[in-house]
Length: 205
Image (cartoon, rainbow, N blue to C red; front, side):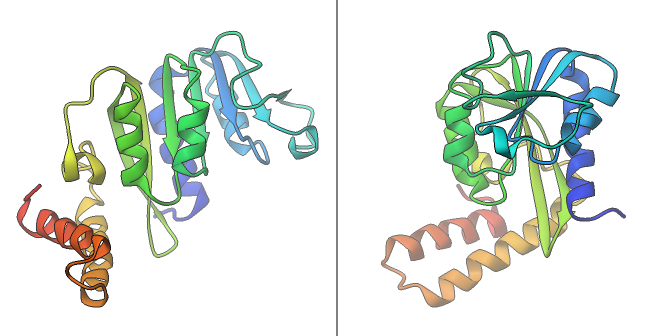
């Protein structure tokens, strides 16, 4: 089984493939690995590799490199791939709305999902990829109203059918149980952790 960045990239491509057409923007392209794989799918009209500063663009000539603050310099985007950033950065980039987006944040995915729902995105698909001691969560969103709410939304409403969800749930539960053991029960952190433990053990929201 693949782990780490390769596994995550495979899941990004898996969720991207059905919508990889027209203008595709790889925002925060880093070394350009995702951009190249997107281009190799052969279904996109053009794949734009985007960084905010020119010195951060990859030093390669086989990609269409663009300096832009997110999607601000792009006239039209059919698919945006925004990965490896925090929730606030991802939500800020998606304020300029593409037709579809595939996103990944290394942490606070509950905050990301709630922010996406609040901004008028619905989760269309999700996938887990082994990474480090846990699992990367890759999310595909489309414009629309998100039907899930509360912990069901924050955990990932489309993760329930993922073959790795049982192991992932166990790790998330262990994380919140550790916080319950340390945080004062009456504190905001303690109450939040207790809510997560109830949801993950009994399905309470």
